Length: 83
Length: 403
Image 1 (cartoon, rainbow over the protein chains, first blue to last red):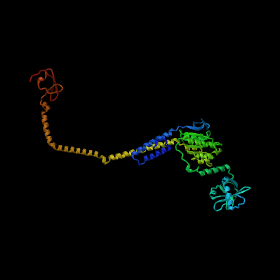
Image 2: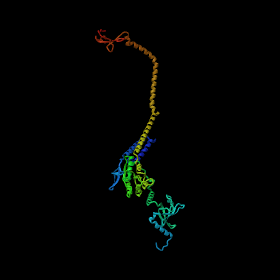
Image 3: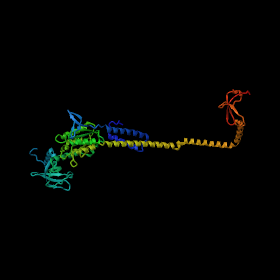
Image 4: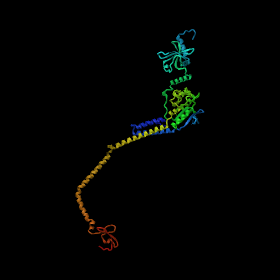
């Protein structure tokens, strides 16, 4: 299993839901339950991390001298933006 | 063709067909005229003539096409028809085979738009199957809009309200004017290539007076279609969708609504995670409890309990032995009782107390100790204790006589 590197939030959440359903069901052995539970905890941590790691930036994508650059901007009161 | 050759009718007709067929312009013409001689035979095909003051053109519109007419055609109606010219050899006439027909009141621009829309639809740009789902949590949200419009402010505000930490990237573009289509297409392209952008909103501010024509261009439509990232369009109005709205993966009535589609509510996601974590924990605890309960049942069952039961059996055996011992004692008690009585009497007789009661006394050192038997054991002046049958005397030796 890839180390959660590029596992999308949505996919992680879906895996987690699958694990929870399995844990709530009757089919798993005790050993398997423990393994599933551990994986579930790992996924919860991953998802929580994802929710925190966005930085809240507002940037503008501009072309300067032929190069594409990202520049942080802020919104001024009048509805436009200032750099 | 040499001057003296005599042609068959069909040869001449074939020649004219080639002539017409080779002219590209005749393959797709738009013609304006007034309808006359409209006939609608049982086959469902439409036959009519388009005429103006000077000339007339015979037209036929086959059943498949005329079904989609939203206007009812009648003689005298001024229309614009699109189609191709071909010769009908049997009758020796040329005809316009009509593909589309519109009331003449529509402007050319509108007609052109209709044609563009039809063409793009045939290519599948609007197909429902092609619409991609929006990501639940985009790493970055791309915004294509004017940097100075209200749309940008609205989208930023709504996005940050729902998910305070969300990353937004604006690719600015003018939304009106000649350069608008190119700027919009370029903005989409840049965002698509940037990486990390999981959804894009293309939108413009409110006000129906605004010119939406840039969003009805083939350039913008194809840019949206070819964008590797799902696109939400917030451009046109419910009754007047632009091509951009139709190509986009989702449509929203306003830029704010588009932001609501693109950005999840952080608290809701956190809550969902918490619930899942709790359910997982409970599920695990339950499983452990069940395992524990099974273990206990096993312990309590007959198989496991035997050792303890063994203990009880032995305990009971011992108790039984004790009972038998006691019973045997009772039986012999009679004989032993008598022997005991005899011994007791003899004991009593030999007891010092009995001797004392006859008047004899014991002399010993003060505080106890063995009886003194010989007078030479004490010296005059020493203290001695005399034990009587009742009480004791503390005495001092005055004189000692040898025995």
